Image 1 (cartoon, helix red, strand yellow):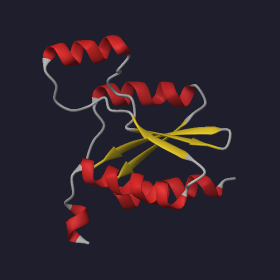
Image 2 (cartoon, rainbow, N blue to C red):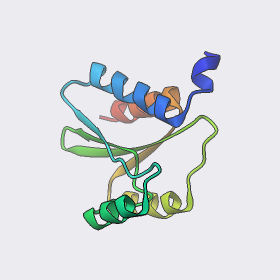
Image 3 (tube, one colour):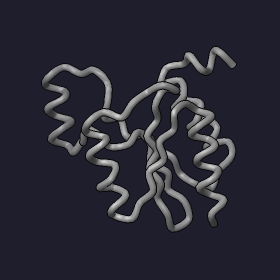
Image 4 (cartoon, one colour):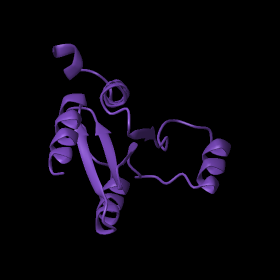
Length: 116
């Protein structure tokens, strides 16, 4: 268990996506790749195409519902752009789950589904 606790955000997100696709085959999950290191020209091009800093890592398309998931390492923190954008997403009527590691994201997603 200690290995998963020390895993990177990438590893936690990969575990979550694999788990989701295995368990929820009728739903769709996709990554929103708006992070990472890029050269200035690539970053400019992506921004022109609509990449938005602070947008959540994952989008889950469910039955008549969309859920955004922001993945963090177990001790991760939201950045200022995320702190600004997440409330806007929620004010538009969408759910945002912040998963602090794979297990936390999995638990929050399962709890969300139990509402229905």
